[in-house]
Length: 231
Image (cartoon, rainbow, N blue to C red; front, side, top):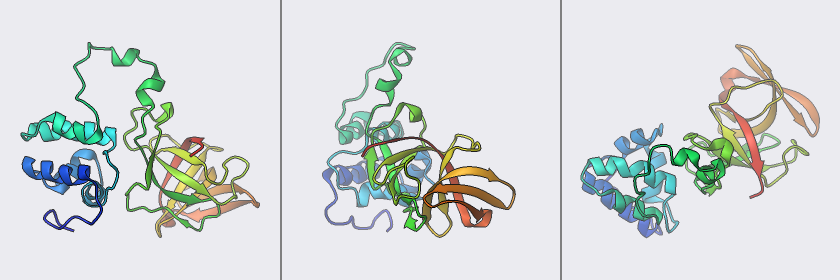
């Protein structure tokens, strides 16, 4: 759908107002998506044309506010869409003195899909969040961090069906760590990383216990799991 396309039915007032503000600022969806670091404009378009929650994610509004302000739209207009007032300027270093838990604990971590323990579930790699989870301290400041739901039982007892796993794409892989693997056909898996070379990645699952060999040509990305939580 183009910028001028009609919004889908049932979107929230916040989504409709976001589109109005972007238009008022003279910004295209593509330029906003680039500002946010999104690979595809459709990931941002979700917030204008398909978003149904009453408020935008706080982190999204805080990242959009400076861009819109540079183009004539007051920052408080954008922040209001997330239900927050603009932050007052704080003395240098004040935020750094807050406990990490207070800086991190916001429900703004996108849940990008469901990675099946058995490897047959889809990862929803269009980048549109299914929901948002509480951001853990391990992902404070990690703008591209995300989460996925666990379905299946192949990684029990380490990860249980229905849990949310937290993922940091920036962390290096080490033997024995746990990973979310997105395949080029859209499927997602949660496994234990064993080793890799230029051609193959070796993974381990627990139920049934076995090693899996995946050709690199079949992998879109592989990212490290840094924690988990109950939904």
